[in-house]
Length: 161
Image (cartoon, rainbow, N blue to C red; front, side):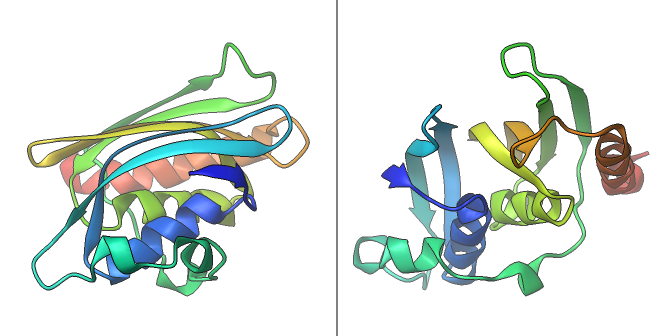
């Protein structure tokens, strides 16, 4: 997929796919300096899922499914300053794989007004290993936002502590 998409397009797409029984197994996406996206997604249709070849992806991207966001459950995470993107953060997560994990995680970030600039998603066996470069719209990520993100990530790991 390539083109200009709104800041929350990946969260919407991920949640819409999950509602249709389609899992994102692998993905890479990057926003360029002109705010256009280039993304490649490997999808897996689960039994009784909608046919991925018949979906209207642009409509899925433009949907507003934020009411579908639910608490995260992570095994571990890391959070650091991005080296290549001023004011951005790199969030890496490991979680038991679940349909909708990517969309749900990005939905949680959107509630903090953080949006992806780049992502790498990979499922290995029953585990998801995902990395996101995220930032606030048009500005550096504030200390308060980073602290809120840190609290969100810590709470998500509590079942594994």
